[in-house]
Length: 322
Image (cartoon, rainbow, N blue to C red; front, side):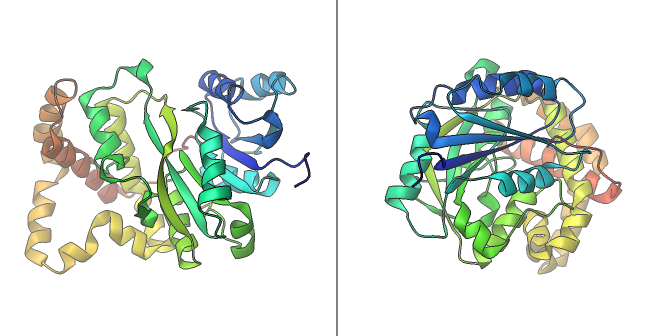
């Protein structure tokens, strides 16, 4: 390989998070890989804060290359990632968030996975993400990390083959040649579930995703019950577009097949998840449990109810972080 061409291109969309972005880039300066082995592509989704000035001031200050690109208007994470894919030069694309702090051997673990363990064109890796220790992880956050409502790391075993719903773009890697050959890009109509929808199309083209528990990173994103429920409402609102783009993915996240087979069960579930139940029963219970202990059924019912609220409203979702 030409020494000037990096082995890895880190794809990092960002939107109005210049403070945490600055910290995140600092972690890449401490990677065990030589700086010539990777580049970090930061695509700014038309931030209105100081992101452009902050990143511009960093160019040339690290031992690795930072590629900065700015979208003309806020277009969502899909558009930002597609721009980064077009700019990437590395054999391996590692998708991360702007608030994901990598361990020192993070990129090395992704490189070994692709160049030594799974060299097949369609092989990919999902890395491990946990909450940043600085945040003081609450029982609610621990539940979100493991239950499947946000992440499902509690259900995975190292080396396990995963379904498309587990393709989390906070820490996942694919071979650029496979993406180029298939021509599959992120759907820019979607601002939620865009990663799993992309994963579904990749897997239909021969992609195989496995869990690499050794590629570790920390998620520096404080979460409260209020912010998590707000996310569920936005997710529910966005499912109208998902139903048009990917009916099978829509059916997966709404459990449509399960409830259509038993109409009586669907009726009972609609009553149990009614927004009134969420507001006056599940949320007060979840607020009581939030910082005390993991209450799986209470948290699950509360989040499902707020998702259902968004699903019923069907209003356009506001601009979201890239």
